[in-house]
Image 1 (tube, protein in one colour):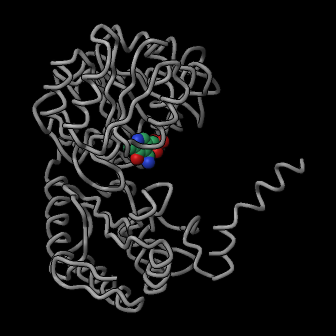
Image 2: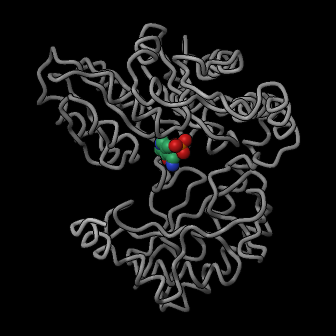
Length: 403
Ligand code: PMP
């Protein structure tokens, strides 16, 4: 390896330190489906760190749809959508998604990350502005880095700051505000009513990343715009299938003209192979279930409310979450890793989230609910979480966290 590269990899010590201490929590090997109970390194654990919000990854009808698609279409498409990789299944799903989120058209990408990269990087030009929430997902940030436009960040979900930033920009420039619908670590919902009013006042467009809101909020889980009844005021809706929709892939929906533009300009679409048939068929089946059985979303919210209540009663600091993503703040990375280790050993799977995913004083345990959790499982997890906090000397008192 080149000398410079070697120095750089040696400097990457954080993971090595955790490995040395025996508390490295990442890349755990799972040998079962992503249900509320999972097999990890030969042990059964309760899963509270999954994005499978509706618990559909092991649903018999979805698995059957995937198997049938393999029988008919094989295992891969061997090319980009642009060339030989468009199946009738892709077109069917694009139509169904557009109808689901209330837009004219949509285009599929092979992952949600690629959807943001491709769409965001191609839409604006040198004198245009991308306006981002400081906590937007990494794929939005990377998409903006690949764009020639100018970039501006506003403080997280702070509509006064957004107003300040918008008021400094030339009136006739193109402006696109992009925000997560539900923020992936903090669990709060974008302030869309205020944002759409500002967009109208300052002549901006809006794109919402509904990765964590699809299947969670809005009519039949149609996302943040639907949740606020503001679908007509949001220009582009992006989503992924790697969470509620039990598969892999992503999409962007909007007016037909913009979607056609993205289809021809987004490099992560044109120069990358299309979603495999089994993934597309799984999403079609999952979407049918989500629309036909809205009670799954109700169960997710029952679980979310119950977990929130228990966590607050125990005195955990859960920030401003409004969703099944519950950040349990520790605000100290070392303790976040220690607590995760204790929980993993006690067979509760959660994810520690530290800088750079969140600011360095915001280390947290990301505790996420699924529709398929039972109240007993939630009680067990919260109880073990309190015990683990006590073990690292964090004393909880209702409404406060002392360290
Ligand atoms: N946007 C957000 C807000 C996300 O959380 C994620 C995935 N973590 C993505 C986009 C990327 O989606 P995918 O997993 O489909 O690549």
